[in-house]
Image (cartoon, rainbow, N blue to C red; front, side):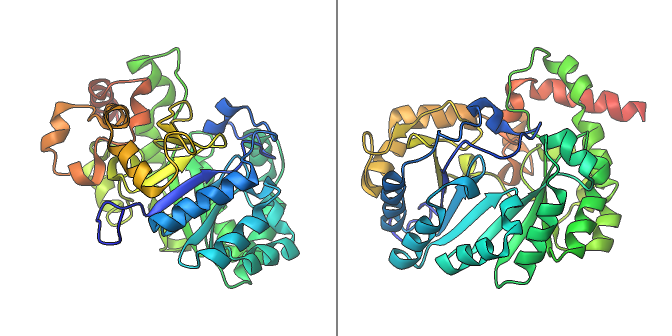
Length: 354
């Protein structure tokens, strides 16, 4: 993991806590139970930060649950800033607690360098239906606070059938309050559904979800040109017309395929990514304690077998696809409930019905 190693770690994602002040209906964290007591011990967190510093990690991504509920967050940021100034600390949050301008300033003073604020919708009613809480006004105040401070932040949104009609309204509201850049992710179901293949696709219809979102691209561009779509569906699910609309706006593959990042949970277990909450590749302090041991672990047979199983292309057709290195068959989690062949048949059937 030297600086001239093209495959060296660039990012470490650390799950600080599984506790959260919301209950989003689309959140993969539901599986973890939202237990506020399920959090990383501060001394263990400092050890993980030391590992990142030794490994030359560039981005430290602190997440949850809701990371702003972590009691030692300010101390963590100070520790990073004082000991590893080359590391850029980032937080993914719903932002509700950032309605407190003083708290925002404390985080910035401690060394926070970037935030991702997760939008939930454009109305109090949508917030309540999606999260169980009306946090809209708090989030907008948080965005106003951040926009007046010297820090970069992105407003992101998980796009679902329930909220896709509010994408532009939510974006405009955040933009009017000072947000500048936006990212969108199509909902990825991390649960094993009882319905499979066509039955699942009919119920959850990714084709109509994509169309409902892409059809708003012109309206989005009228609000801001600084928006993009995060990695999720394989590129072949989009029509050529949709790909033209999204040209230059589709983010690249995830860390599972690129191998340039790690995720560690509250038990200090190494995971392929935060969507694979039940997959333990090795525990810090047991299977690895330094960058050399981590590299050896990740290159070992057990970890490689687990990662290769996740990375397996959903179809033999992917190997010769022009989009392979930009797509790798889409997020591996997609294939829990339907096959690639089922998806392609469903796409053809759906488009023919238009």
